[in-house]
Image (cartoon, rainbow, N blue to C red):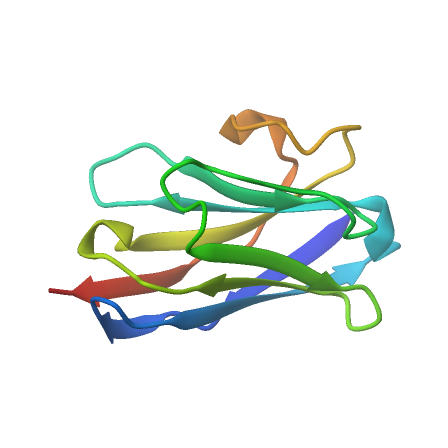
Length: 125
């Protein structure tokens, strides 16, 4: 198993930036593809971005493409989400997730096996 702790959320004005971090502990970090999801109040949890275990491939939801960047540092057992040009509609609780399944192209919540506790991002207009 892997344990995940999400940090870095906060309040930011529209157009600003935030960097979320996810620290992982447990078994070999590179065995896990990693992702970020988010859940706005009253809405379903939605896929944001994912990265392969090696860090060589990434994928993004259309709503964040060109504004958000997912990355990982396997030496530090960490994954990051750099969020730029933030919009009020990006307001949500952001969750780090991990899977040992063979692909990063899973966008459904139940296809990811391990979850962080979430970190809240609020973007004011």
